[in-house]
Image 1: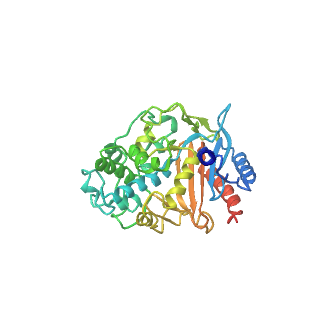
Image 2 (image 1 turned 90 degrees about the horizontal axis):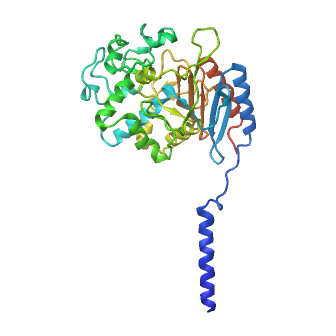
Image 3 (image 1 turned 180 degrees about the vertical axis):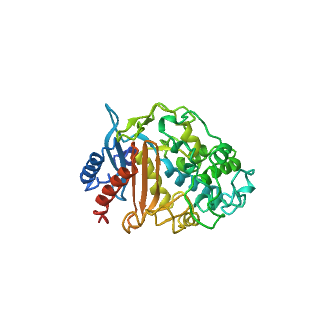
Amino acid sequence: MRDLRFLVCHVLLIAGLLYWVSTGLGAVSEPELPFAQELQNALDSARQTTNVMGVSAAIIVPGYKTWLGISGVSHPGAPITPDMLFDMGSAGKNLFAALVLKLAEEDLLSLDDPISKYLSPLPNVEGSITIRQCLNHTSGLFMWVEHPQAPTRIPYNSINFEKWWTPDEIFTTLGGEPYFPPGEGWHYTQAGFILGTLIVEKVTGSTTSTEIQKRLLAPLDIHGMLLDLREPVPVQHKIAHNWVDIDGDGTSEDVSSRSRNWINSLSRIMFYTTAEDFARWGQALFQGQVLSQASLDEMLDFHSPTPGEPRLSGYGLGTCDFTHLLGGVRAWGHDGSTPGYRAFMAYLPDYGVTFSGLMNDDSDEDGRYIVGVFMNTLRSHLPLE
């Protein structure tokens, strides 16, 4: 009888311990960043100095809770909240390049394949351009943004917001002569990534957005990004309103009611994210949780110099080397801008720290100022003991 009572007590004790652990009651809570309030003060001060409408930021420091900071509003009466999504603009190139590298790991394509292996001829596009050259901006392809008839070159209110540009239209109506033969220079251009999305769709039989979620984000338990604006926006998603100075008078206006078809189709990799998910992505990618080490080495093989982009120390596959921008501190990531949004994400490999910042306003200068103030505050506390 005594043995039976002992056995029952033992079983109950084990069951209690399992419940304690499974519910998280037994987990050791990570501490808050010791300089969290200083970060928030810097964010508020920088935003107020620039009069940017709203900012959302996140910092991941190993051993501490993820820091989330917000400041300002989406629109009058609606403060920015940590779960609001912002357009990451060209920073989406980082996710797309990672997808292509993942497909290369699965032998669905090779980085050194010529695009002619997958695509029919297009105007002003040399078929010998490789997938690698598409991803690191050494293709020589003309950048549609620089075309005099590009929507970005005309008054904002004159844009045909509902228009969905096809790839053929982009390379004809907004096309131009290559800057240089493939592999013989460097020029930032969206064109290579447009071609890249066509190749991804060809080899997977699926869409870029579906493959990014399935192959990259879902394994990281990231489910909050909005990757395809052609689909209805889920009710749980809150998108920060974007603000643009549409008439050059120095005052931004809320343009969130305008269709994003035009810029979505001209980009083809327009993704919306929270600051936290963006930082989680960067942390996982650059710490080797997404790609093999060989693939990550390919991504971080930086081409230098980068003419026309003095803030960069180099450019890899969908990845910027921001070391020069951050005053000599090694930093990898990407930034982005579309009308009414600015985005920035950087991983600091010497500290294992990731920062992301998103804003719903239209000034590159203001965006750089906010990032600079914020990063200076962060760097003053690194390394943490």
